[in-house]
Amino acid sequence: MSQFDRYLHAVITRAQREAREDSSPTVEAQHLLLAMSGEPDPVVEVLTSAGLDTAALRAALEREFVESLSAVGVASSAYDLPKPSPRRNHPGIGTSAKLALERGFSSSPRKKDLRPAHLLVGILSAEVGTVPRALTLAGVNRSDLLAQVRQTIGE
Amino acid sequence: MSEVPSDPADALAAVVALRRLADRLEDAAVEQAMRTGWSWPRVAEALGVTRQAVYKKHVHRLIVAGVKLRRRDG
Image 1 (cartoon, chains in turn blue, red):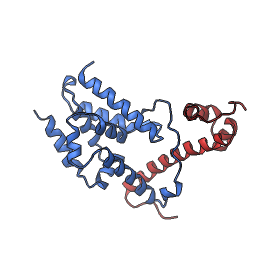
Image 2 (cartoon, chains in turn green, red):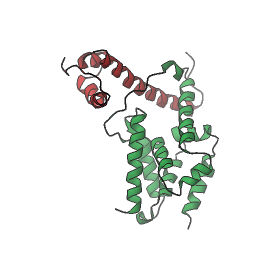
Image 3 (cartoon, chains in turn cyan, orange):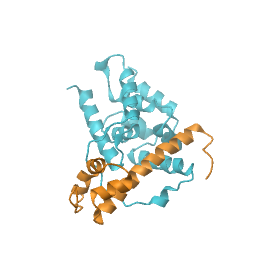
Image 4 (cartoon, one colour):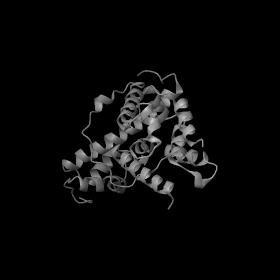
């Protein structure tokens, strides 16, 4: 197993935990992003220097959820549910996560050169969906962030 | 009821958010029903899904959460 394979395995395992705690039947791109922000690797510094630590990401995602609901007249506070016991089954990889992984893998010309930064490129490449909306709400310019991550791959 | 949000991105994101809200609500509602002694067939019929589906989706987490469950066919 290469170093990147081990990293990927750790991130996906962590993302599955995020998905379960989120009552999500599948792992989505935002769960991968949350997982990456908590997995030790130098690429995390690009996120934290943009103000995106795990807590800030969670807050931005929650805000995206609340605001998207309110756009159709649903107040999420109307459903202030007790936190359900998390699902036990292994959530499968959802479409947005699959796209992020594919984009990440294809951002490296050679498979053996894959690094965590490529995975982050894959996640940040999505122009629509939950992650880019949450980033906008957090006041982060996604294109700038993407450029910074690409720079760390540079050499 | 207001109109569909004019920005397609907002309208589509609302669909995603509503699905997520429904998933959360389902987890909480099934747990509440089972804690109050509802049977699997009754919960399944109320949700409009098969009892196999609701059982498979929720039984493990409810056992781990220590919810006292009635027999599956009870």
